[in-house]
Image (cartoon, rainbow, N blue to C red):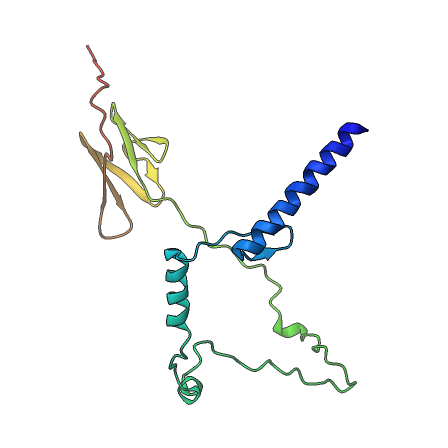
Length: 175
C-alpha cells in the first residue's frame, strides 16, 4: 500500500511539473500529448510557402469549350421491341420455313505438310511414312531427293517439301 501511494505521488508531481513547463514555454498542447515546435523550423516554412503558392485560383478551360467537345463514346439508343397483338413485348416465334434444320458443318483446317525425315527411299511427312507413288492428301509422292521430296497432284503446280531441320549429330551407316 505504501509503494502504491509513493508511485501515485511521484506521477502527480511529474504531471504538475510538465504543466508548469508548458505554461512557461507556451507550447501547444493536444490532449495528453505535448507537441514541441521550434520557432525557426525550415521544413515547416517550406510547407507554408508551398501552400501559399497553390492558394491562388487557377484559370482553367471554359465550360463552353468542354461542352463543345465531341464525346468519344458512341451511345446508341436501346432497341425498342414492338408489342405483339396481345400486348406482350416478347418476340414472336420464328417461322418454321426460315430456320435451317441442317447442322452447320465446321470448317476443317488442315495442318500444312511438313517433311520431317528421309530414309531409304521413304519420307516422313507430318508423322507418317510414305514411299514413292503413295498418296499424300491430294498429292502423289513423285520423287524423293537427298533433302527434299516432290509432290505432284491434280493442280498444275507441283509441291516441293524440304527438310526443315537437319541434325548433324546422328549418322546412319549402311555398310
